[in-house]
Amino acid sequence: MSPGPALRRRALLAGAAGSLAAASGCVGELQNLVGRERRRQLSLSIATVPASQDAYAIRLANHLRENLESAGIGVSVSPMAPDVLLREVLVNHRYDIYVGRYPSRGDPDELRTLLHSAYGEEAGWQNPFGFSSVAVDDLLEEQRTVGGGERVATVRRLQDRVVELQPFTVVAFADHIAAARTERFDGWMAGGPTRPTDYLRLRRDGEESTLRPVVNDVRPTKNWNPLAVEYRNRSRVVDLLYEPLVRWPAGSPVPWLARSVDWDEGAGSLTATVPLRETPWHDGEPVTPADVAFTYEFLTDTSLGGMDTPVPTPWRRGAVSLVDDATVRDGTIHMTFTTDNPAIARRALEVPILPEHVWSEYSDAADLAGIDLVGGTTEALVRTNEDPVGSGPLRFVSATTDRSLELETFESHFLYRGDTGGIPDGIAGPPAFDRAAFTVAPSEDAAAELLEAGDADATADGLHAGTVPRVTRTGALSLLVARAEPFYLLGYNCRRAPLSNQRFRRVVARHVDRESLVSSAFGGYADPAEAALKGRWVPDVLEWDGTARLSFLGEDGDLDVEAARAAFREAGYQYDGDRLVTRGTA
Image (cartoon, rainbow, N blue to C red; front, side, top):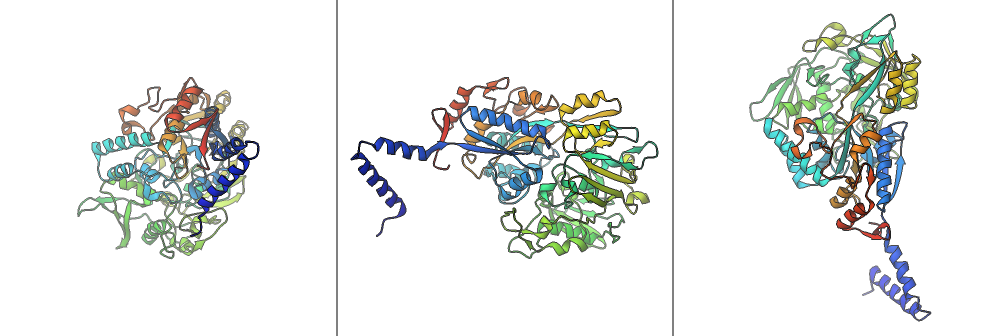
């Protein structure tokens, strides 16, 4: 039998060592050489966006980099354009640590999508961390089957377990800061226009009929696909083009494209009957119950059964998974859900409804450079959607890539006809403007400049805390601040060593000083936190009291280097001098 590669390698090294030993005692040099090959400094890359796109994220990334470097790890920060970053993190899963803002709505069921092991190889916000825990899976399933106080208790146990295992590290809930002028339009919500219905609350003052929001996210100027996950995490502009069955304008559900939602909790499963308002698509075709049924089928498998395995949407996947069946009977949509709790099932009614006559022809397989999706992808998920056909109160007019986007009001929309039963008065009417001309500013500071000059009406993407003094000094501007549900996090790629080791992740989490960051990075406009959900969902042990359960390895923002190194050693890692080392490529 011939020797295998490993045996041959050992024989080669042994022969080399014997030869060198006979020549001037150089065995020690060979051992040093082999040792250096096997024990190299552990290195990590932190993926985030540039400061021009998110000043908070880059500050967090640099804070973590400095502290991990002090602890002996080689760290690089890799700023990327937002769409490139999300493609690498959410689709290709090529990253070590991701620093950014998770677009949370504060719904506990979001954690199921974010962490369930069944989603570990899917694209999108479906478990982008590749995390797996039977205990967490069980709690994620349980919270869908119980209600009331029992669900609260389950979600609290879930959050406690997530903090223990650290698939991601929550840092803070940043306030949503915006600014607006009021001489042309008034009625701005605290935090600025963060939801499509916020644009419906505006009142026109004077003769101006064009609303001029400013954004610093270029993505709405070059992609209008409501399913493209790398384009949909921040700006809500595309949501103005597409309607869901139900909207949540202010913390409670409002029937929107649905005229009503009639729940039936009998017969062993939760069902709903959903009649639709009469309204057309932007191309004049009527919105029908068949479009709704098609949407839920399509979002479950965008290949419509044409590929070996289903290709679900990477955006809204968790919401769609709540629907067991959506069929048309007697001209009405009838839906069956995978949960018995209407409070949970309502999340399924927020997905954008798509026109079947447009999207059904994009179910074929797609193969594009830069996309590495397990199981393949479809044309529907990668198309730009250059001529978007929705049913929203605004429709697409034109766009200049990286510069501007123009929408106009759609006067055939049901809001113009007074079909507003069940919709609150503040949003039960057509927009107060005829056109919305979105301008892209290269940074949040540039957005503030446009407002100061009177060239914009409001910031639609928000501002960072550093712009607040500038806004408050300008008499024509109103500062709009609101608490927000999205949170900043460190996301770990649990598919890769050493981040696959929960003990390592727990030590990394202790290199973050939340209290210091809220002051230095967020300018005080944030709440430090260790749990991903707020309020009643947070167990007492995770209520923020100034110190995290995984406490910072230092004080007042300064890392205690010896304590940090001791923590890594306790987690099973070794040092070569002041470098944290690893064997081989692990």
